[in-house]
Image 1: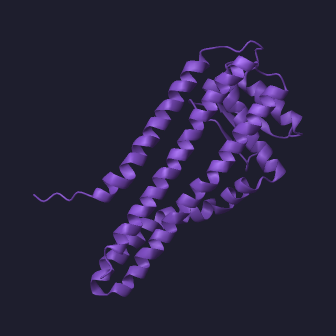
Image 2: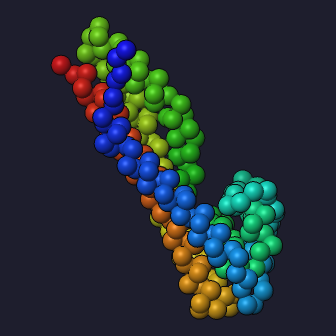
Image 3: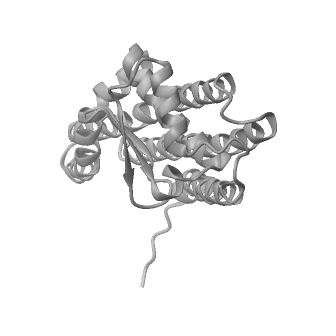
Length: 234
C-alpha cells in the first residue's frame, strides 16, 4: 500500500499546531493555579466586570452566567457578558482578570475601537470563505489536469482561506487591547492588590499566547495551501 506523506504539513503546519496545543494547555494550567487563590478584597468576577462596565457608562450591558470553564465571552448582539461557572462567582485574580477582559471588549464596542469593528465586519466573509476554500482548491487542482487555466479556481480557494488569517490577525490587537483595559481598570478601581495583579497578568498573558498560536496556524496553513496549488503549475 502506498502512503503519501505531506511534508509541507509536517514542516510548516504541525509545529504551529503543537504550539497552539501547548498554549491552550498553558492557559488552562495557569488559570487553574490562580483560580484556587481568593483575592483579598473579595470581588467576584461578576462584580469586577460590573465595576468596569459602570465606570465606563455601560450600565445597559448585562452580565449572565454560562456553563463551563473559560467559556466567557461578550456578545455584542445581545449586549451581554456571559461569564462561566469558574469565573462568575469566583473571587480569584484569575477569574477577575477574565471577567474584566470581557468587560474590556464591551468597552471596545461602545467606544468604536477600530480593530474590533473590522473583526465584526469580516466575520460573515470569513465564515463563507472557510466553507468554500477547500472545495474550491480541490476542484481547481482536479480540473487543472485538463488545463492550467482552471488553477484560477484553486487560487480563489486560497484567497477565501486567507480571510481566516486576516481574522486572526485583526483579533490580536483586539485581545491585547482588551487585556490592557482590564489591567488598567482593575488597578484604577482597587479591585486587586499589586501581587494579585501580577497573577492576573500571568493569566491574561497565557491567554494571549493562544491567539498568537492561532494566527501562526492560519498563516502556515495558508502558505501550505499556496504551495500545494503552485506545485500544479507547469
